[in-house]
Amino acid sequence: MVKGRQKKSEQRFEQFLGNLLRTGVILATALVFIGGILYLIRHGNQPPNYQFFRGELPEFRSPSGVVTSVESGRHRGIIQLGLLVLIATPVVRVACSLLIYFRQRDFTYIIVTLIVLLGLLYSLLGGYL
Image (cartoon, rainbow, N blue to C red):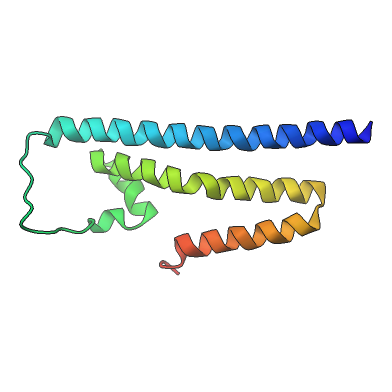
């Protein structure tokens, strides 16, 4: 009976993580698509200027800048927000896995998942620290 409950719990866990990843990718795709369409509606007729390279604007170099850009109605901000959601999706998956392993008191997976989560967070936020 315990094995059946454990298998059902593991199946629910895997289903939850699968749905989390699927939802994150669909949301990110929708944001990038909507932002891209809005951007092309406004700027689609402008000829590109390939003589000069312009890097990413300063407001798109931090998550708070992207949110501010979206709040001000900039279409490129919506595209960047979609990319942030796409990047954040696996990080949220690892964080949810960590919480579930804490609940299950599986200390081996807690340690491994915590190391992975810290590595992901450092790689994402290390430039701002």
